[in-house]
Image 1 (cartoon, protein in one colour):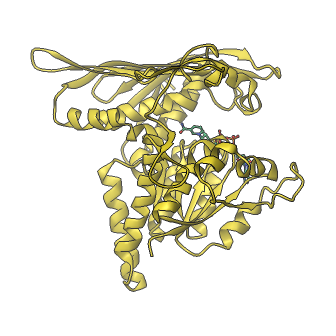
Image 2 (cartoon, helix red, strand yellow):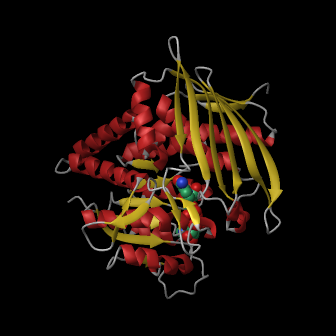
Image 3 (cartoon, helix red, strand yellow):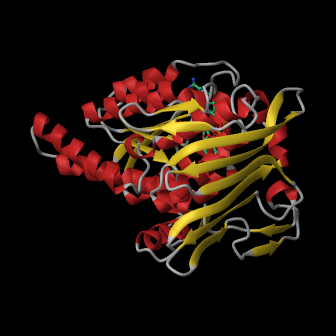
Length: 420
Ligand SMILES: NC(=O)c1ccc[n+]([C@@H]2O[C@H](COP(=O)([O-])OP(=O)(O)OC[C@H]3O[C@@H](n4cnc5c(N)ncnc54)[C@H](O)[C@@H]3O)[C@@H](O)[C@H]2O)c1
């Protein structure tokens, strides 16, 4: 049997915009059986259940809400997800779509309940936690996929292949940017995006650092991040802007700017892109991705675009629902493809082990997990934990106003402020 039950833990923005619609479509294609969504309280679950966009795209499909929608909207159930996990059959799928600091506990709980895991980025905030997750998952023959969907953008996959073929030369100097909309400052961000907890480099810069590692195969060895602080509307202080530099093992440098400040009146939903210069024999190569204006522009009669605008750069590449030959609409884009690829990996692992006795099945599942780790296409705790080292180094550096923090590999990978 290929279809698996899925429990999504967390019913917020990413669940609405990507995870739930992707799983609804995979339910249509036969990879997903029942879907449960567990949130802290019933309010976001009601919003998901009543979302006009989801109803229109997936008529007749529904999820089981935990807590029930009849519970008072604000009554909190912080431990309920443990009961829901406890009621699942073994080796189904738990999707972790919680705020970053809660990922570690929830992933470990899902593994203890013998569930495969899909976790939205970042997996965790500390390298040691990702090692712990990797170890427990392998012991139990469970797959953990980290949903770094930019890897599934065709332009990233193309760049990765051609970089490996030597078509560009060796990466030497680059820049990336990801500036989220100003409107984020008015959202729930103001409650948790405080200077003591995170910053724009750690929150979104990580996407492009991951991509450069993905495309080039190079490891980061030092990180320097400076930030600009400001106040959210509720008075909380946060880093609203960050400017980072990452040194790679071959000496290459990537600078990354991030912020919560793309103008709400701008035509893009944010600003983002990547430019890599490479050294070759007697000439240089280059990879340039404009990830903001992908060449499709719409002017609407009503202000229905992002940020309430009329004129918009529209990306058909990340996630959209479009007409298809079945009922409603279907999701397309690298966001959907990334979720589908993690589900497909889980299906492959389970079907390779089907029919074997328990010990042989465990060893077959482990073999396939290691193969996926080595292939390096899907992000896993084993092949993407440099991201946790980069985040740890970035936090130390931004607190020291941009002093360099080194990443040391070897038997005991860790980060260390230079000169300490
Ligand atoms: N591009 C990307 O890859 C991308 C984009 C957006 C968000 N994310 C990641 O997704 C995660 C969630 O972000 P979001 O924007 O959806 O957040 P959000 O604040 O909108 O939603 C968080 C959800 O977690 C639920 N929750 C909190 N504690 C809980 C508990 N104890 N039990 C059950 N549910 C609980 C809340 O009810 C809420 O529904 C974050 O890790 C974020 O970094 C990734």
